[in-house]
Image 1 (cartoon, rainbow, N blue to C red):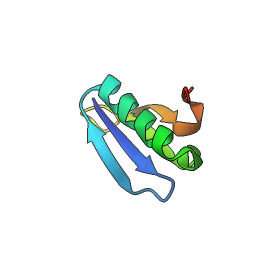
Image 2 (image 1 turned 90 degrees about the horizontal axis):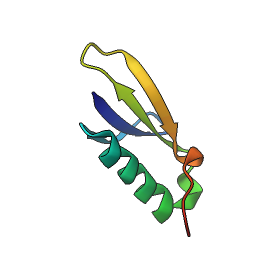
Image 3 (image 1 turned 180 degrees about the vertical axis):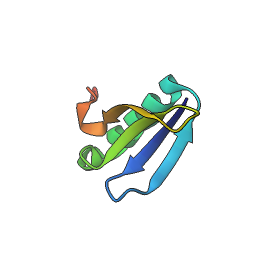
Image 4 (image 1 turned 30 degrees about the vertical axis):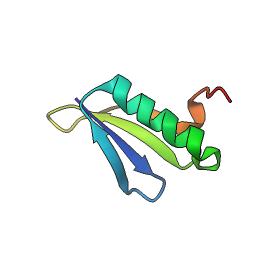
Length: 64
């Protein structure tokens, strides 16, 4: 699986092989720039190109 973080404009921000690392990176983005929470998301894609789980920055519960 590949876990890719995108901006709302469709630009690839970063990609990971590990889901936990990808979610942690997405969390860091939202924590650093809370106003971007609605504009960043993570998409899981398998080796055949099938899209799976999507995690939106705004769905994360970030402690202050």
